[in-house]
Image (cartoon, rainbow, N blue to C red; front, side, top):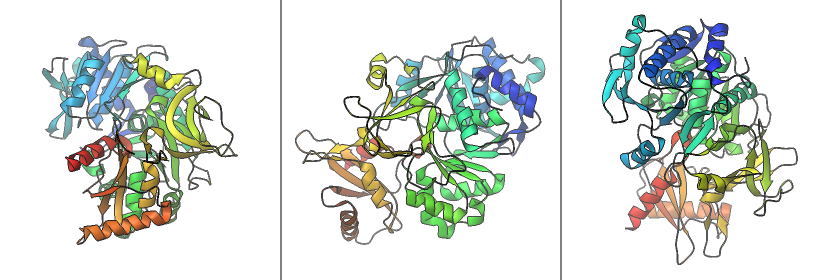
Length: 513
């Protein structure tokens, strides 16, 4: 069932009509499997309760929760009422959450409570933070409640506000229309060939576009099941392996970081388990062609790369499930969008010339919440300026070069992309993971600091970093090397697996203090 012309208020009821008895949500906390008929009925009950508390079309409902069954029901309920979903990271500290609460001004806030018998609950709180009944108490009162029917809202109306992960500063609220959310889900289903027999495990959380769409929307678009497991079960490669084995997932959504970790630790993993999914979708960063090829060779399953930003409602460039180019190092070809490479003057560049990737199409954000100035900086008649450096290949594929906003300027005024250094460090046999961050300087060129996660504690760290430095020199040349190296237990990452460069910057500045 395609949904490109279906609004969010129609999606679930159409899915129930076509796939009512099929599994919808597999609850990893309780072991229960909820059918679409049962799950949509429960979401309609939650919607009725929210409506009784004054939530209606256009109102904002903040959901602060890990991916779990009550949280998915909350998302469905919010959309059923024509309200605007505001999912946020439950791990965000007050200095991030407080300004978001003030800016979003939700009518109701739903938050993850302590683990309850049978799994986590999500408690209701009014804007003043007063606690209320849990979702399970709501569902227990189903016999006393009339389920809420879908509210007809234009597809151009806001459907969600997703706060960007803040890798380069305080999060910005990206306002996405209901139509953009639905079309993004349809693109995933159509591009990757999802069907009602799929059971999809997505490692991202609901506050990230890939986590929200691949859990709450894309499965419902075709009658597939979403596997919901606690964060602790998805926190490391062995936990993911256990989830794949237990729930027999036919699809896995992840990022390049997990792919690299699998390849580093494959001697300790079970290859037959990683062959369970018929496809692995990878997004959230540059995927090295060598990593994709090695993963596919080890698992015998396609590793499918796709590209999208929150501001583009996720997917806008992708390989397909049948593409033989999945391990070619490119992002694939545009899907549901127009992609152009422009120079600083706005001129479209010919194939093989690098410039800024600019996206246009119907799925672009409505704007940044309360920030028309920031919106105007990145959106114009040409489309959304991604800040990514890319080039178009002659056959229409797009190749990512680096992140313009991550680039640092050396003392010789050359631009250096941390991604270049990170890609080279991935090949070092003594490293499990690595990242690089630029430290701005007002008096001299920016300094590049590389963070290293090693296989074991190094007895002679200075000697080891010297070896790493020479390793990079052989690959990058003398002018593109880190100024310093730091050992770290693990690379901090954001939703979707992106490197948390702000956390690394704080770490680097702390070391200098």
